[in-house]
Image 1 (spheres, helix red, strand yellow):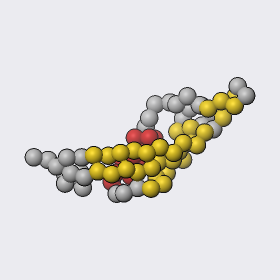
Image 2 (cartoon, one colour):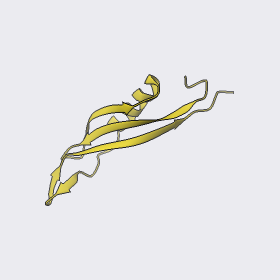
Image 3 (cartoon, one colour):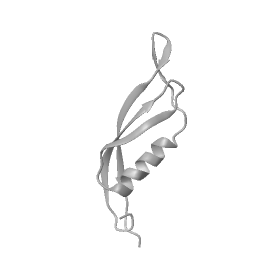
Image 4 (cartoon, one colour):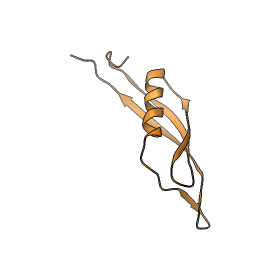
Length: 75
């Protein structure tokens, strides 16, 4: 797939817990398993996030973000 040149948009959903770590990463709307798995890998390995706060206390926060992939064919 990556060698052909293609792209698309997928939506990934995950939780940032009270310590800022990512958990429960899921693809909501994907377009190809190879790209879906790469999005999960990148989000899972992302650096620590700033946790959400409610009344001054850290709380879990659900995120849904789009990720756009573009590839070009190898020459």
